[in-house]
Length: 377
Ligand code: SDX
Image (tube, rainbow, N blue to C red; front, side, top):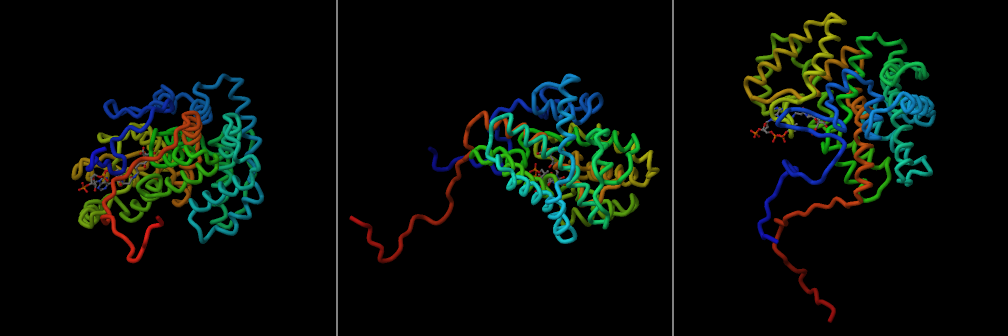
């Protein structure tokens, strides 16, 4: 083994395993979920069908979808014990910490948490997937001093998420844009939170521990926390006329501009055009050309100055704001979507049965000894 091994900081550019879940192609700037272009799935299939595809490898037949939806709907009601935890934490903890705690509690109260048989993982995943909208919705409603809204079985996943959050049936424009965002956020190969879930799974720990760890990774502003940070950037700038001055100051202070850049994509994020189109429908519906102006001006100026392109979080932040979500709720929404991808990778990692444990190159003090120590003969 070489004394001076090549270090790949952040595993940048390192291929560590195969995956059949999704393909991120930098050369063609494309993303496939189980072989299907994500743009086609977003346009032609519901988010629930996409989740089924990620977990089972094929799009569901009508019967398979009906069965999947029946079970999902049977788990939508917010667990009273979880509601009590949310009541205690709202107002002091960040919504991502509350979601992480809620999932941890679900795991701690599941007597079969350790069961890692494929069907058991999918049963837990579908129940958790069904409960997340109620958890996230109740956090926002609690923040506003409002009570929980009971789920509606006659609404699809995205529509019920909005119903439980706002207490009214969503307008088709909001429902469709939200459904598209959930499909686009669902999966993205070995991103930091998904790889975290795989590392935890590789030790044969339980499903909930892998998801809780992934939530912790997703919270960071360099990863999932960026969609919340994008909206805070918009609020900080105010309007398009202030972009130049704001960028001068931000770049002068070496700040990272949230919603821009990507470790893998270097000529734009394949998902952005689809989410930008969805954002445009919301801007037209809610009559907010000011958001379009700010969005376009910041993108044009930053790309011109740094040659760094928007990622999915850039259009998603203002979209969630227009739909009516509180800014701190944006990343918890990402959790409800990405749990689909995490689950597919947890299944795959379990099947590969390979402990993830990379090497390190030591660069600390040379060997030295404790005075007076005498080794046993
Ligand atoms: C997601 O991996 C995934 O697939 C993630 C994700 C998914 O679906 O799971 O796509 C979701 O996490 C998207 C990314 C969301 N994060 C942000 O928007 C935060 C802002 N972005 C940056 O922090 C950055 O672009 C990263 C972390 C996303 C990627 O950074 P890299 O590839 O590690 O590149 P880098 O940080 O080494 O930057 C290279 C250069 C640096 O300049 P120098 O130090 O060499 O002079 O580009 C600069 C960086 O400072 N740069 C930025 C920048 N992004 C890169 N400068 C200002 N603002 C930025 N946004």
